[in-house]
Length: 389
Image 1 (cartoon, one colour):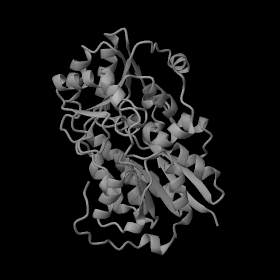
Image 2 (cartoon, helix red, strand yellow; image 1 turned 180 degrees about the vertical axis):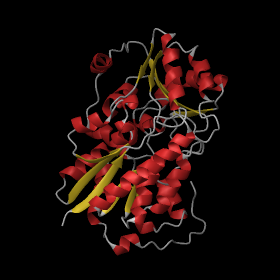
Image 3 (tube, rainbow, N blue to C red; image 1 turned 90 degrees about the vertical axis):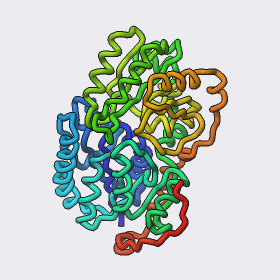
Image 4 (spheres, rainbow, N blue to C red; image 1 turned 135 degrees about the vertical axis):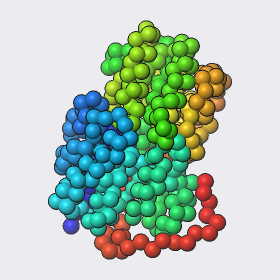
């Protein structure tokens, strides 16, 4: 019998990470893929990226409307509640053999909690990592403890999951699927990218990807320091939209306002994953607090300046420079990142997040894992002296 697997996607960023897993699941006769789409994908404000999923040829089993048009933490909390109601109906109807979730978005608590109530085992991607300045860290750890199969993206993350009491046979190092596109899809040339984006990349560009810091009372307070720095950065600036978190609309408004003061600054609502990776490949530096500056940048040999609290504690390679949320420190790190010596030094670095074969590894495990009661019944292990990375 086919294995019925539900995959959930809620945002443009993790859909890019899931693309090849979805393609491989859809093409494998062993699996019956059911794709559930929620959150920012369904929002006109964030670009209606559900249309990108449709253009890619995926059949959507259900759309879960849940994202409030809000810019507050209360809105985030209510979004979880609405999503829980939607997933209760969808998962009860589908009754899959397995639910596959990725990363650490707060709204992923909804399908996970529903799956627990319905006795549906969960496979989780990107557990065991650390991002101390965001609620993502608590969400990621909660998803780990609710899950039954773990696809860790670094070896240290695998060790950390086991140190949380998860049975080692359940925990697999696969690498991040975010890197699979670099191996399996051709990126755009500079000329193709310039034409698609109507953007002049003849001078060195800086990609700005900054998200609200959701553990701060004022989730956007670090952004002032970044904008103060960018006023004196002469490079072409390319802003991408933040995640749909509390404070995101303020960041969007201020990014647009800043761009109007510069002849060489643009703001993009949405870039598909291949276009985004192509932009990174053709740029001189990435600046902000996005996980892309931690994961994908290394494989592209791209210097990245990681600002402030959001990704604090996250494992990364030497191409990533950590900066305090202080305009002087940010400026100093950008100068270092733009220097020819530094750029040369970070080419061809090994990436702790894998080698671009994550989807193949995950599919092999999903084919072979024994479903049913054995998978659902967890017997936490006592771990003494395990590495915490």
